[in-house]
Every structure is written in C-alpha cells, then in structure tokens.
Image (cartoon, rainbow, N blue to C red; front, side, top):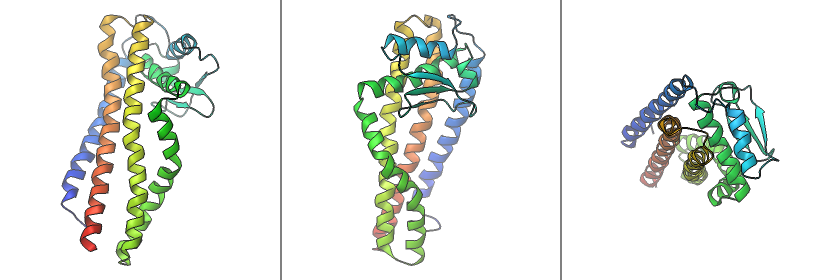
Length: 226
C-alpha cells in the first residue's frame, strides 16, 4: 500500500495537473492584459449572448470568491463571474464569461452529458468523501470487502470526472462560436480566446487522468490481495 508501480504514472499525471494549473493562470494573466476590440466587459458579453439565446431569465452576477471562481449555477439559473471577468474587457474576460454562458445554454437545451453529470453528482460526492476511509480501513484491517465498496464508490467519482470532460469541451466550443457569430471578437483575437479555453480544458484532462490511474491502482491491489 506504501508504493505501487502505478504510482510512477500517477506522479506523472500529478505533474501534468500542476503544469496545467500554472498554464491556466499564465494564459489568463497574459490575455487579461489584452483589451478586446469590442471593449465590452465580461458581464456585458454574458448578458448579450444570453439574451440572443432567449435566456433573459438567466441572471449575471458579480462573484467575490476570487479569481477563476467563475461558474454557472443551474439551481439559481445564474452565471457568476469573478472580479476580473465581470468588470474586465480583456480577451480572458470574454473567454471565461462566454464559457460559463455555454453551460447555461447546455442547461437550457438539456445537453445529455450535463444531465448525466447532474444525476451522478450525489453519488460521486459521497464516493469522493467515503472512499479514502474505506480504503484505509480495509487495508489496515485486511477487510477486502471494505476495499471493494470503496472502489465502487470511487469509480462513481471517477465517472463523474470523465463525464465532465465533454461538458467542459462543449461549453468552450459554444463559447467560441457565439463570440464569433455575434462579432464580439476580431479574427486576430480568436487565438487568445483559444489559448485561455484550451488551457482550462487541460486541467480537467489532467485531473481525470490522475483519477483513472488511481482507480486502476486500487483495483490491481484489490485483485492481488484477493
């Protein structure tokens, strides 16, 4: 339990995740210094896209939870944007705002993977909290049944992360298309939008890869002990 050959791959995935997080911050900061030609703020762009999509009931609010805390709340039908995105008129601001609006559009159209993600959330939340304790208790007490239950619960959490990938990629694709269709960015600004969105997507890929490798590790240990 102290070390397993799979840990080499897990450490590599961890390194990728840390690099991805650094890349996200670097790209956001880089393109936050470039003003968008439309001179619109993230809040204005979010409101404009929502209204064009017939989603005037979806609110756009200012979140004060820190940079990169932007998200769409499906229960409150609200897009919440952090300080630099809500009031900023940079390429980064527009990219992030449009991405979160992409989730609002997914919610409105009942995008299949988003619906599945919402349904998986309760089980995934339980799994991510209980699985570590079941693993530790099962291996310490040599009770493989506990480990087996932990693997099942952890697998639900991993499945949630896997399903999150197409949800995030789809939201980014919607963001690019809407920004271009509505003439909110110039051709030369598409590269910056892509850099910001792609860097964010890479963090989801890295974290999902690490979770999958961890699941495989526990399955291999479980089979070996059995």
